[in-house]
Length: 133
Image (cartoon, rainbow, N blue to C red; front, side, top):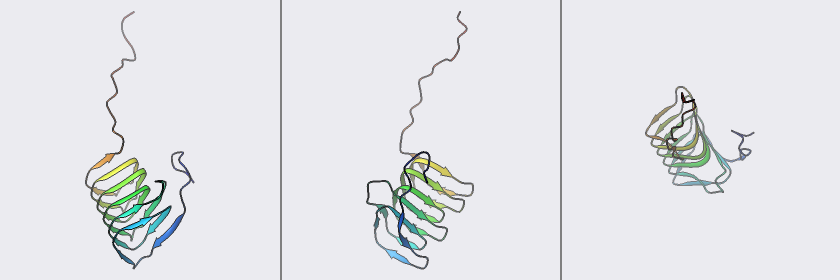
């Protein structure tokens, strides 16, 4: 599996099950799926190539930072996806969002600033055709 010609997605090695509440910072390597709640930051500690899935029932109250982030639930805090951010139809983010690539489905809600990691300067104006002979 790859996205936009990128590396294969890392395996999900950790799971926060529905009904579980974690208090405090959560650091992970490779992949993490959250079906429960985390009250604290969720941050990838690996080489940056990581996968974080927040399911429809998942909730994070804190900063989220990983390579590939898929949100179907709720995040109350800033989101930083340095590879790909996928906002599924029921996603709700209350906080500023930084991303390299963004896929946002109809129904997803972001209450904050959406800003790409790379700044896109205006290209110099270049005319394709001229009337001069």
